[in-house]
Image 1 (cartoon, rainbow, N blue to C red):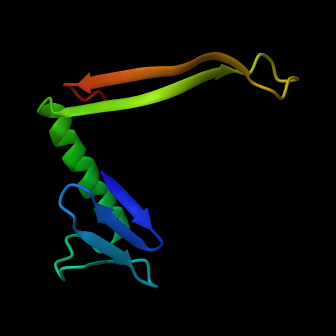
Image 2: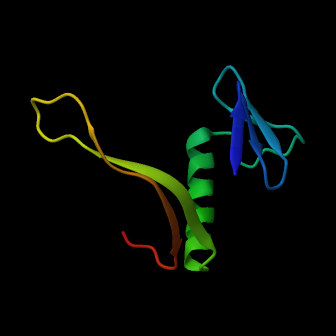
Length: 95
């Protein structure tokens, strides 16, 4: 899991941090920056998630509130369900 504060990203798993500089590049706290270019970083993260999915190790846990907008003339949502807990475990990737 990643957290952010200001211009700093921190990995809760390995405790490594990266700071975004004024040019939009990521700089690591330990001077070993795997992907300073943010689009490369995104692709790296995406590949890691794909590996977890294919290995059966990826899961999603969340609570959700489901609302409906009955028609385009009504600007308010109607609550349908609330606090539904999902635990989804994926084993394949569908494109």
